[in-house]
Structure formats: C-alpha cells, structure tokens
Length: 311
Length: 95
Image 1 (cartoon, rainbow over the protein chains, first blue to last red):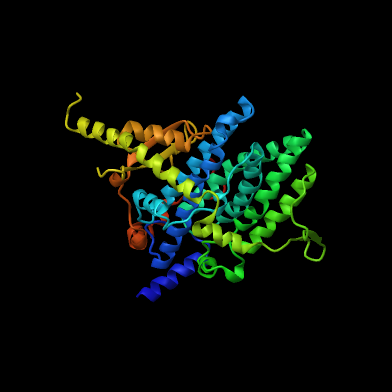
Image 2: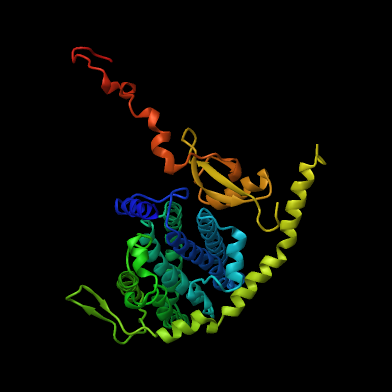
C-alpha cells in the first residue's frame, strides 16, 4: 500500500505536477521540506539583523528609506516561507523554538558582521545575488506552496540586488577611501557568498533525495557556477577585484574556474563559531520576549470582546 | 487561544477591480482587524491588490485531493454541457 502510494507520488513529480498540502507525501519528503523551507525562512528573518544594523547610519535619507523597505521585504519573505512551512503541519511556535534552540539552522552568511556601509552594498549585490540564483531555481520546486512563495520572492528580490550593486558602484567610483571600503567589503563577503550554495555535490548529505523529489532542481555546484559567472563581470564593470588568484576564464567550459573554498571555515561557522552566531540568536530571543506583552494584550482584547464586553 | 500560537488566517487578494480573488498565503492574527492589516503589510506592499479577504483557516472546508476522482466523477459523463456536443450546420450563423 505504502509502496503503491509512493510510486504514484513519484510519478506525479516526474510528470512535473506540484504536490499540494493535502496530497499524500512520504514522511521523508515532508521532513525534508520542513527542514529546508524553515531554514530558508529563518535566514530571511535573521538576515534582517546585519542590514538593520545600518539603518540609523545610512548616509542619506534616500539610502535610509530604501534600506528600511528592503529590511521590511526580508521580514515579508520570512513570513511567506513560514506560511508555506506551516502547510506541512508544523506550527509557527515550533519553528521559532527550533530556531532559538539551535535545532534549526539559518544561512551561515548572516553570522558575519557588517563593519562599514560598503557591507550593506556587498550584501545586496553578493548575498542577495547568490540567493536569487538559488531562488530562481526553486521556483520550479515540486511543493506548490514553496514554489509560489519563491515566485513571489524572486519578483521582489531584484530590487535588493540592484540596490546593493548601486551602493557598491557609487563607492567603487568614489574617493580613494570609499574605493578601499568597497574592495574590503568584497574581499570579506566573496568567499562566504560562494559558501551559501552549500557543500560540493560530492559531499552534500541532502542532494540525492532532494533531486529525485525535485525539491531541488539544480545542484549546489551548478548554481554556484552561475553566480560566479555573473558576479565576475559585474565586479569588472565597477573596477573591483575578486579576491581569488585562481579565478580565470575557461574557454572550453565557457565559464570561470575559481579557487578552493575553505570548508573548514564554513563548518566552523555552521557549528556556532562565527563572529555573530550568539548575537544573532540572542537578539531574536530578546525581541521575541519583549514582544510578548503585545501578543498577550492582543489576545486579552479579543477574549474580552468575545465575552460581550464591547457592544 | 494558546499564547504564541495566534490563529492562522488565509489571505485572498483581488489583483484589480473586476478580477477573481486569489489565495496568496496566510497570516497570524488575534482578530479580523489585525488579520486584514497584517495581510495588507505582507501581501500588498507593491500595490498588488484592490481588495483583500481574510478568513480563519479553521473555517475553510476543503475537498480531499486523494478522493478527487470520485468527488468530481459526476461531471465525467456530461459532454452535452459543452457547445461542441451539438452538431450545427455551417450555414447557421450567430449560434
């Protein structure tokens, strides 16, 4: 019986039909999705912090308005994704608890600090740029609510990408000091951005099932290559240098070969030893606890009205 | 209402006047007013809608996709519901 259901499920996926919340699905598919979508949601939410750090110090009113809108979008993206995750039968409360206790992860990149204004540019250009490559691919994911959330997010994300590139261009073409800041930001964010795509396909624990079930549509390494090829030309145009001495055009493959990624650094940060891991989670817990009275008051207000206190 | 697990509301947005309302996701809120405001902030930050409906998720009744064959079966054998079922001479106009 289970076997037959599982075959019908796989047939549906092979026929490029979407799986919807009430459809039968293997338990492992459900668990994989909860892990992946919630990790994605948590990344959007935690990702508000490094940029939020610069809202009060944005160099102009225009830059400040744009940054506030962008950070608000990130909150929105997190909520679209929580909404999609909840269709799989897990509550928001459970998801938040998993994040705060470290049971669920979020993207490693947000454990790096934003030291200068150029970092806000680097995040938009590189971090959102990398996220877009991944998310464009995920628009075709097999789970309906996840796919729809990705379509929505991709529409909004290109504003973020351009916003970041604009900051980087302005600084890269500015004073010597600004140029140095832009280059320094690129130097610090380049390698962590490449790590965002996850381990090499040969070392990735989750790739095979995810590909068979079409949760993922392209492999980590393929997506990483797309990102590198795009970014190299964008950096050239504004006169910045990608910090990789092995980076060079490969005429045979028609793409850029690049140097070795330091996976020790990646795992160190994943395992909690990045610059900002503790700070990010502590801030989240603090905001959640400080918002408790608001939630309590809203619930009390509704209860009171239900009991007929208001005509 | 258990603390921290606020009720889930499904959100439907009408992209422009005259169009069908479309489901676009959910929000959490304690009451109707908050549900509408949250839906506006979340799903129409770029003028994506001319009107929003919110409805408590627990109040929505759905058919079961696993039974969709038998559920939609009554429509299976009624081809006469389509205009192509009827043979009409080409000479007849306006039909």
